[in-house]
Image (cartoon, rainbow, N blue to C red; front, side, top):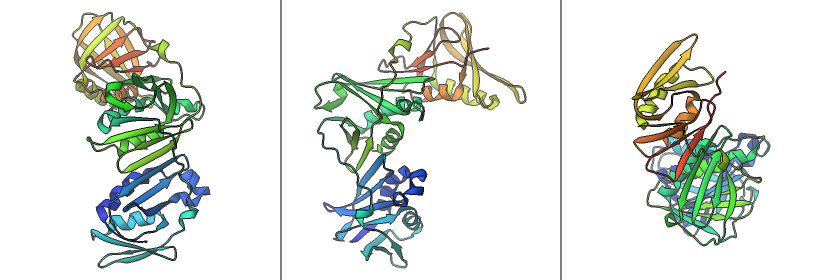
Length: 372
């Protein structure tokens, strides 16, 4: 293999594949600390895997001679980050990778492609196609409600509930729940019947990270045990989570004793300020008084003291005092794409619903911390 590549192109490729390394697996399988570089179809292909997720990206470069080699990621990444030259020559000889610039040369011991774990292929042609911007926004609205769980693996993933006329995305960690609907005018598909699958949280986080270009498309291919996310220059293939996602429809409130509308940024600022006085439980209290014109965000710490923040609000209904984990509350608020937000309360021990008043396609439900 003999190629000429620009440093910024190689760094961009490393940024895409770099975050899926598994320290646990790589301790017993050192090959997982490596990545595969190969030439294919006049492009340079970089691949890395942790055996659960595999990420591949294609970067431009001048290919003088084709080939492949498995290289330790960290050492080459360190070299590339510290090189001053933009133009880099990569040459493989006898399982060594030789890196050359005008004033630098290094030789790294590599391995043959056959030593690298086989990356599975998706044979299915069942697909959904989205604009990158729409898909990234939709995933961002639900991903914070998921949390990796060894006891209940299904809680460590995002539900894809395809219903032909729409795709429902949902996530829950049993304390909070988020749902986003994408209607069929916002995607293309050749799938004729509904299905459900749970995609691991780590996979979704990687998909969000690679979706940077607003004008790009992303196509998702589904099989019973795995899924492929494919853009113009990158691919993520992942296992899916077996098991059944919780039936959550019954916990969605249909009516509210208290309804509040207020400015999103004001509430975000209030949570960040008052959180300075919270302890490891992250407790803040929201106080709402009937016929008042503001709500109070309050926190107290026996050692540090207390503080409060008043936010102008439109209030309809009865008074309520309710305690939340402020971090969980912030997660549901900050991703909403609106200046105003709606919050629906029942009593201090019932979940609240948060949404944008102008967007009925998504909501966030949060359980309070029960008062003693």
